[in-house]
Image 1 (cartoon, rainbow, N blue to C red):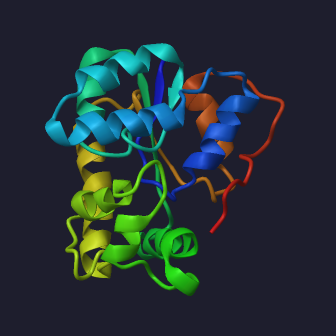
Image 2 (cartoon, one colour):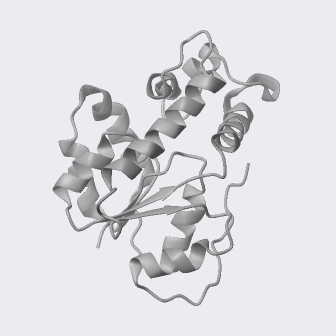
Length: 203
């Protein structure tokens, strides 16, 4: 069974990954996934990404948190499970992402600008400019709140619509809710000695 977390970054994806690790699932190498995304995604070359999906059981974050990767994966691996992690509100997601990026890439903790993203050393210089391209913002305002919130909502709505008639294949979950872990176990039809999700990488 292959399982893909298709929620946007900063929706509890790291905590979900830790939960799968605790359950002894084989986790995909995230750094390699990001390298494939960087090299192939924007050229619409999905075959290397799909080939990489043969290496493990669970995958999360880039490029699986971006469309149309979700649809390509579903076509190649028709018996897979998909988990859409969400926050309580789109604004909560936006604030968490901006705080996280400000801490990593902004000078003195401020919101990063185009130059900051261009010079960020994550993976390679220039990699973080994909933030602009994915979210649909501009170089003059890379963290425009309205545009990014629309992006987040559109991402979630498109996935929910895509799986509308396949409720057994998609779990929409907010890890902050008390009943989320039992729902998670029921969705996968597995047992666990744990009672809740671990809380990782909180911002």
